[in-house]
Length: 405
Image 1 (cartoon, rainbow, N blue to C red):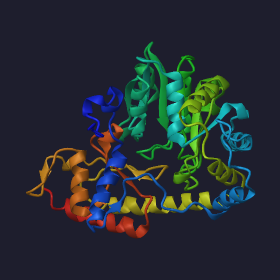
Image 2: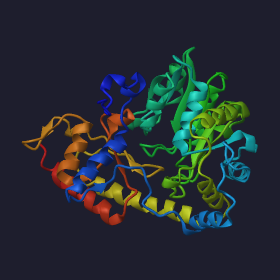
Image 3: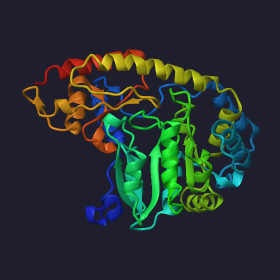
Image 4: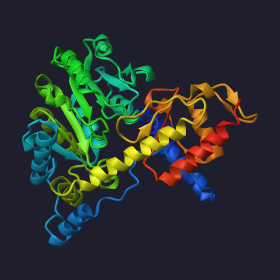
């Protein structure tokens, strides 16, 4: 009788060497507790706690009722959606694109992967601004590239300087990737900082930038600056965006790139061989999101800002938590290294992994270790949760951390 269970040595090296997503791993551990009847407050996933606005849902329902959207869509997305994305980019980002420069994908994560696989050959170096979103490094490794980490520390608002970028460039550098507003730090590059980065990269026309702008609408600075809006960087920039965060559409899985035509064509080719087009009905919902009322998006951003200020005050009451005031997204990324080496008599905290597990086991609050983001002294706390849960979670954290000495 043949076995239905694959042995470890049958798994490819690329998968064997691939780290599991830390955010998903922590969510799985939290689900284990819930299955035992233990309430866990999840501050680990980067997911809005709002429902998708009603008018967007109606757009999807209307598309179903029309009965015209049950065939395979074009691989790069419906033309009218790509036209709407172009209009959005011109109006909001001051960048002009044609529809054949847009590729709609199954979430911004696929958009990033498409671009990375289309540009990176084995051995090419990819400069990754650190702290980074957990999947950046994994996607680089799957593309057989070499991640080069550009560290922005807490003393510099987690933003590496243009001088650091210049020093990290080598003849093997092919791609630079960053997010602004940042996941996990909430930091936002200013126009001056972006101009300095653009000045460096424009001197290296064979290096391409993947600019992750998925948190664009959750920005408290009053200005979002797109790398592609600098004329000298237009031909070197792949802008990644989507509908998950600003429109509370995580489960709809709609992301997109805007890029030079030859890169867009390559990404469409890649996508055509892996997943093909994004879901037809999800695309109609996305079209509604762009063409109709943005009021709910702005209201959600206002609520995130209120929660940010609340959480900043609550975290300030916990000794040993060193944090910055985030300027965007919906995360805090505090340095918790003051707790390393401490114990409650049973559990010892040696690193941020231990810290998160201690908080989960004792306070029943799920966070994410900063090691997953390239910053092992930190943890990520999502404030995309209700005020009640935020108050309760941080109170429970404060209580259990007080036991450590």
